[in-house]
Image 1 (cartoon, rainbow, N blue to C red):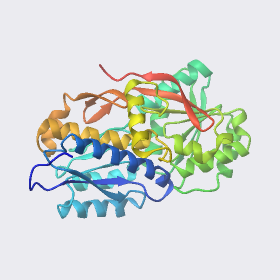
Image 2 (cartoon, rainbow, N blue to C red; image 1 turned 60 degrees about the vertical axis):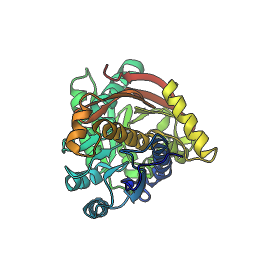
Image 3 (cartoon, rainbow, N blue to C red; image 1 turned 90 degrees about the horizontal axis):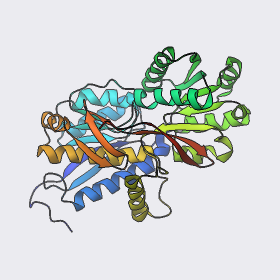
Image 4 (cartoon, rainbow, N blue to C red; image 1 turned 60 degrees about the horizontal axis):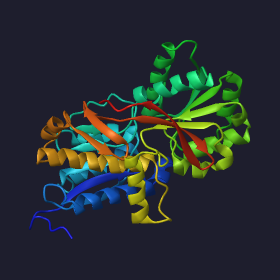
Length: 361
């Protein structure tokens, strides 16, 4: 057992992950990956000689409610950092509350553009996740016309706007229709009718968790999977399990990490996860892994700075490169740049079919 510096208080981190709402399906894998990261950090001596502890905050609630709890924890000095997987609407509430006070590592894929001081972004962005996937679909599948279906909040809308910009630079690629639904939507019949009438050959999905699961099931029941391809930057193994094997035909996902990623670092990570949590562990996926990634990134920054000051962490981040389950990653402008892969659903799992972009050298 590691002996931490005597009488030094623990370093407590607000770990904001969904335990409720449409994204609640991700919660167990996020928490398991967070536990694994903290155990490994503590086994190596903790951070600044202090034991690291997670204080879980349910990030699946209304954004203002989540931010109020995080803000209260920071105000009271009960947490010294913030991280976790939660939707962008929550991030937009948390970031101004904690900026310059405690480091905030936001782990999910997101729409891009976050520049709040002291906020570090560990996830993929549309320029490296959506655009190259659309290029691949044109080149390999001949798909040039798309419908967008998304939840009605900032990540889907801003990401779809990026997809429209990308399409304008690609020969004959068009976004023929866009539809947005409230988080928690259960009836997708009107959306499916519009998709069928649109004449599109593909559906670009920006749906979260259980919303995507219900959409996939309805899509397959309507028989649309027989002639339409689906592509999503947010589709992982738990969502495949929830959708069912009959609802995942011709479904593609782009991400920096898949459990099936055949790299040494990825296989090593999945092995450690299986050893720690066993056969009944939550399905390992890109969203849970992002929580591990966020804590490792925080550890690298704090270890390099020797303190928690966000300015010092940003200075360290200017030259930070390391090997992670996603392969070699590099921090640039507070964003973690990484290789991004394309995978196709094979029943309840993924087969990785292409590397879309490489991590910058």
